[in-house]
Image (cartoon, rainbow, N blue to C red):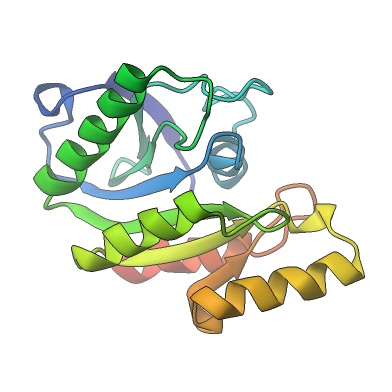
Length: 190
């Protein structure tokens, strides 16, 4: 259970990352998939992580200290078409540097929009993370936006690429699946 949450810093290179070696959980996914919304909901702080309807607003890694014991890390979204090639390359380098330099990274929560995903970019990111042996938790977001027929189609798409027990279905609107995310943090932090 999250009792305390505080924004600590934004970083774009490893010299700026926190140096206190607390465990970290990275929230990664496409632009506007709901990373910041999920962090706000988990922490019960409406405005802790900045939310925007405009894709591509988050351009840094944002570190949030939770219960003074671990960090949730909000990453910029990938797959946003209106970014320049240099911005896309910078994003890739920042994420790769983060992933390769953080021994305290315990899990990567890969957020995927249940209605549209998994996209090609999502699958590339998943394969990349698995190739380097990161512990990945697939978090399907916005499940409240689907009707019954769309839910059935989404289940089929996700089953093609992930084992069912690998996917946590979530909705911050209807408070679905969030207890399972808390369980993930609790398992490591005990």
